Image 1 (cartoon, rainbow, N blue to C red):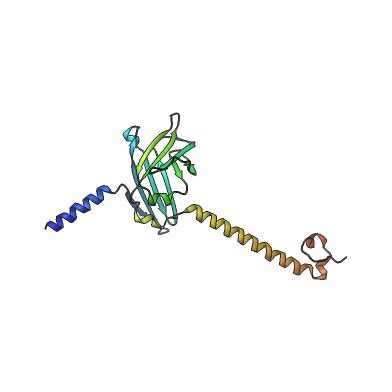
Image 2: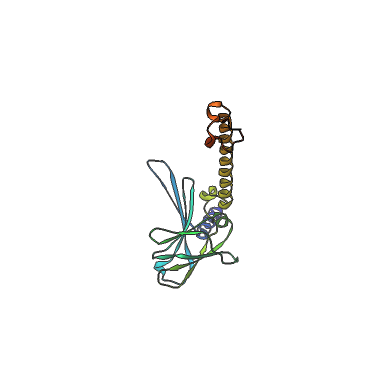
Amino acid sequence: MKILFALIVLASFAQAQQPWNVSESVNTLTRETTTIAYTRATDYAGAKDKTPKLMARLSGKTCEVFLSVPYTVLDRYARIRYDRGEMETPGFMIADDHTAVFLIHQFQQLKTASKLVVEYEPHEKTPRAATFDIRMLPAQFDSCPGDERKAIAEEKRAAEQRETAEKSVALALRKKICKLAVFASNPEYCTGVGVPVQN
């Protein structure tokens, strides 16, 4: 009985320490699961009914993290700080309705840091800061990129390599065509491929 009571207490304590609220939904057509987790600001100078939320969303293979606020924000200013680090300006985008600030390339830090401060600029107000407890990001987000910047750079490098290979194949084909007498008399097509043009 004592062991059961201790387990219940530990479970309640762990739940109380979990700052994230999680919900899941399934698209009935695509069978795709969307997971949304949010945590409310723990330190915020504004009205309690306008407390910002930090949202993490996983839909299929798309991962997003954004600040959700119940009022209009401007698209010219956003800064963040993890734990005791320096304030920095991240890549960010503003939602079409100007009530969310999407933070780009942040999942690596979300998985390892304990606290996040987001500074943003509401419409016709001075910049505000909100502090979030980001410990224990739910396990559903383990599949999100650990370093999105590296993944983007690798994809760009792979695209450049594919483009170079395609150009090499195209050049080799032009050389073969220009070696045929019927095409060799076309100087515009055969210029620069290394095949002498027959007059």
